[in-house]
Length: 89
Figure (tube, rainbow, N blue to C red):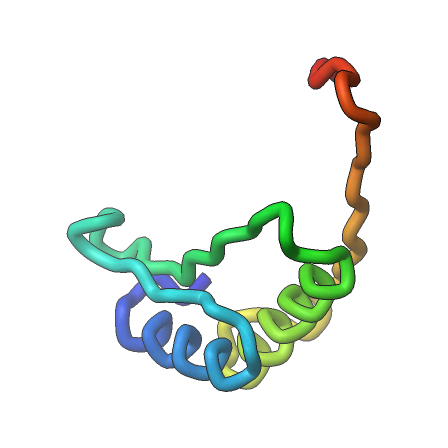
């Protein structure tokens, strides 16, 4: 992640334009130099929604030069449980 507020704010704007709400957070919410986009995932999101979000993060991050091309390889695995199943392990 970029770390400084201006690049993260730009990333948040571009993610929003791409259909992903990735609000930028910076100081004093996080330490100086640790700014980052924040996303919230809910049970209403489908696997395709999450994959699209990851793809947009990669595209915007590459465009802004904060994510290297060789460092991105997303595969989303969603673990499902039947009702009443144990949350362990």
